[in-house]
Amino acid sequence: MRRTFQIALLVVAFLPFALGTTTLLAGGARFLPEELVTPQLDSQLRFYSIFSLLPFLIATWIVRNLDSASSILAIVMCATAAAGAARLLSAAQLGVMEPAMIGAVVIEIGVLGFIPWHRAVLARSESAAA
Figure (tube, rainbow, N blue to C red):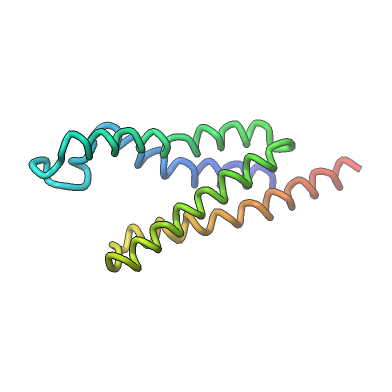
């Protein structure tokens, strides 16, 4: 159960890492035709793309420090779910998203399931140690 949790966490965290890397390299041209991309928009997108890399780096730390990572895990998962909720707000204001983005929202809000799963992994480890 512990190893499954660790692998699942890294796989889920790798998705924003891959997308963040793509946005870092492509900038605004990833989302708009290049002639519509302003320097300010491109700059902001590349800046925010770095934040997409963080969940994977933090997840790597969590996997290595699983027994003491409860607070950090909860913070990262709640922030990710809040980002998914922000996407829902955007959809409510601007219209329905592409199916791939709907899938992203489901994953972003679904990561809250890692919090009780982590508690179960720790409880199981403690009972096995006793």
